[in-house]
Image (cartoon, rainbow, N blue to C red):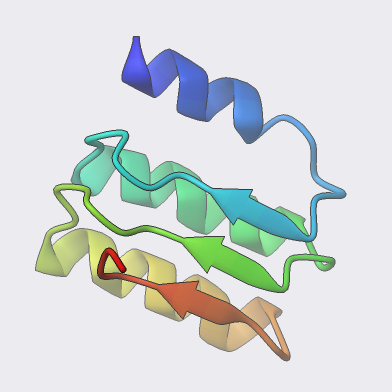
Length: 79
């Protein structure tokens, strides 16, 4: 159910903000988010807090950010 919610969010490639905190995704979800980042040049805010983000998943996301986004705020820890 959580992954389905996240996948529905990743359809809109014109979002400026993506809130996926607490969904519980891991490395595979991070790969999907990395692909989303590559396809969405408008993204300026990304909240990945409270997920099962592994080092592998973080590498995918970081690589996507580095190559495709000029200014992005990323939250990794809950407030």
